[in-house]
Amino acid sequence: MRIERRARWKAARLSALTVGAVLAAAACASPAFHGVEADPPTAVADVGLSNGTGPAFRLSDRKGMWVLLFFGYTNCPDVCPLTLSHIGTVLRDLGPTANRVAVVFVSVDPDRDTPDRLAQYAASFGPQVIGVTGERAEIDAAVEAFGARYELHTDEAATSAAGYSVSHSGDIFVIDPEQRLRLTIPFGVAPDAILSDLRRLIGPSG
Amino acid sequence: MSNRTLLTLGTLTILALTAAACGGGSTDAPSAGESAANATAPVGDSAGITTADVWARKSPMAATMGAVYLRIDNHGAVDDALIGAAAAVAHTVEIHETTNEGGVMSMAKVDAIPVPAGGSAELKPGGYHVMLIDVTAPLKLGERFPVTLQFEKAGMITVEAEVREE
Image (cartoon, one colour):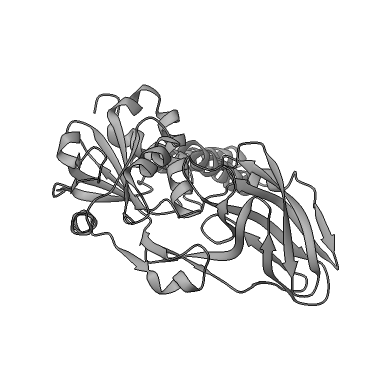
C-alpha cells in the first residue's frame, strides 16, 4: 500500500514536471513582440522630404535597409531625446546588425528646425541617425503614410517661454528593406525590449 | 512538508524559471535613473520636503531645451506643491507635463505639481519635468548644477542636478 502510494506520487510529480516543461516550451516558442506587429506587413507609401537647404530625403532611397522612423521636433525636451537616446542604445547593442539599420527623425516643426540644426541634433544620438524635414504638405503626407498624428499648439506661445509646443505620435515605426511597415513601437517601451523585437525581426541574415 | 506541497513548489519553481528564461525585456515605462534613485541620498530638506535623484538629460547638439527630473517626498502633515523653479543654466525655467493620449504625446506648462502630505511626486520622463528653456550652454555628461525649487508651503529649496545620459 505504502509503496503503491509512493509510486503514484512519483507519477504525479513526473506529470507535473511534464506539464511545466510543456508550458515552458510554449511560452518560449513565440515570445510576443513588445511593439505592435503589422500582420501582414503593409507597404508604406514613399515619403519625400525636400529638407530645405539640406539633402532631400526619399524613403525609397533606403530600400534594402531597415528603417526606424520617428516624428518629433528638437524643442521637445522629454519624449524626443528620450526615444532617440533609447534608439541610440539599441543601435549600440545591435552590434554589426546596426549597419543594416537607418534611423530617420522627421521634424514636424520646420519653422524652428532648420536642416542644419536637425542634422546636428540627430547626429548626437548615433551615426545612423539623420534628421529631416520639409514643406508642410510633405510632412503631412509622411505623417499620413504611417497613420501618425501631430498638432502645433500655437495658442500656447503666449503662456510658455518655450513658445508653442507640438503634440506628435510617440511611436517608432519599423520599416523593412522592402519598404513595408513591420512594427509600431509605442512610446515608453524600454530599450532592451526594442532590442529584442529588432533582433527577432531582422535576424542574423535579414 | 507533504508531497503535495513539494509538488506545488516544484511546479511553481519551473514556471518561475520559465518566466525568467523567457524574459526578453520589459515593457515598463522608461525607468531612467531609477536604479540610482535608491542610492542617492536626499539632497534637499525643508519643512518635511525631501528630494532625491535629481538629474538632467545631457543636451543633444543644437538643443536649446532641457529637462530636470527628480523625486519629491512630503514627510509633513500638510499638502504642498511645487509651483516654480529657477536655474542659472537656463534663461527661463518652467514646470511642464507630458501626457500620452492614444499614443500622441503632448507637453504643456502646468502651474503646480501637488505633493500631498505623507506622499510624493515623481518628475520623470514621459510625465512631469522641470523645463529648462534656452540653456546658456549645452548640458554636459557628469556636470552638476543647482536648481532652486519653489514650493507653495515649504518655500525655496535648492538642490543639485547631475547631468546624465538617461
